Image (tube, rainbow over all chains, first blue to last red; front, side, top):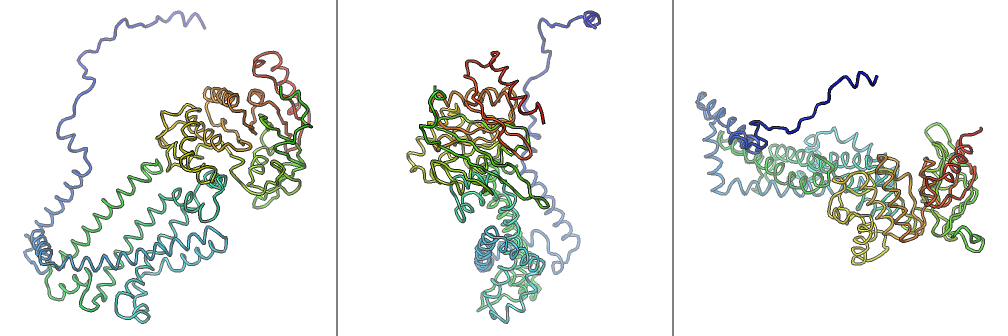
Length: 288
Length: 259
């Protein structure tokens, strides 16, 4: 054994010449720009807008498919004459009320569920019954109960938000590690204090997912509900704006309405939720 | 030396009397320990040692108040232990025992304020002092996910000590660490004990660790856990001497020698 080892010569480099390798080289400007996520996304959006414009021009029928520039013009016109901002405000106000009430109810339900086995059974039964039920299907009933107006829309909004958030929050609570729970108990935290100081932050990634899903559901339900009806005392929301302009064959305005819905969705997702995520779950190393 | 004084003249800090612990799995009732007796006195470094399945961790959880004995009683300073509380701080084996949404400093402060041990200003001061004691001042504003396993355990120890509990309960706190870090942490723990003389109840399955950490060692035999012996350990100056080898051999024989 030792003989074979001795047979192999040792390798020692007295100095290790570098040659012409550059240890640190700056990337080309193209590569540097390409690495910025926002630039890549903007490029995709621009390309889509270009396709849209090309198809619109080729089709040449603004009644069926207005071009991108027509849509932009209609969008800015309706912003400057105050129609879109007013409609957006109506929609957002209704939306936030429904979303808020949904969050509060979800919080109550999940707290009850985490506190007792019966509560957990109740939440499971309710979510499995109501979660698959489309919110819009409740609208006729809501109209009978709450009449033609905001109340009905808020009712279906709450329904669409509540179950998604409750389901996610509950499964988040259940996946909190037993060690963290024991640490909380060790501090003498019980009941609501344990929920507030340990379970909610520990389950925050799941809660945030629930909030996002809930927001998307709420937005969809709202626009759909406003399309079905949505005008109460002369002031409708964005869904109504879309519906109204379709009736008047103002297709560019219909597109402008849809455009507004998309932009609000993008802003909420990429600014509001992204900021919350960066300052919470990412910072805490709970999500990457 | 404390062991020369007669313990009869002191009341024990923690007394475990005839404790039988049982827990249910979906289809069986498991008896983890059977009529275990022992007393822990002030400034003891009391080690629960035994092979896996001897119920030592379950016993520690019962002392922590997470589990009620089916028989017997556990008393701390004469009062029955009924629920978890800040007078018995736990240091767990798992690295996820720190709250990930709080920095090192906030983790210690929150323990102190949430339990109502001290007010905010005092908590801040104490947190700084104990984090310094475990040598983590540089990382005081870091979030736990940026720390190594050993550093996380140091924070957990700092947090436990900052609470100044009647007894610090340590559930194999170094078991998930690599061998080098583990030895370093054992030395540090002994140094901390020299400084403040806290009472610690330490669970381990390593005979070597038990001899090194403990001043008194309780040997538990498995399935279910019963007291096999309660031994005095050797002074730390005798580590590596024939005395240690002899004690190790004795413990080995008692735990694994005959059935």
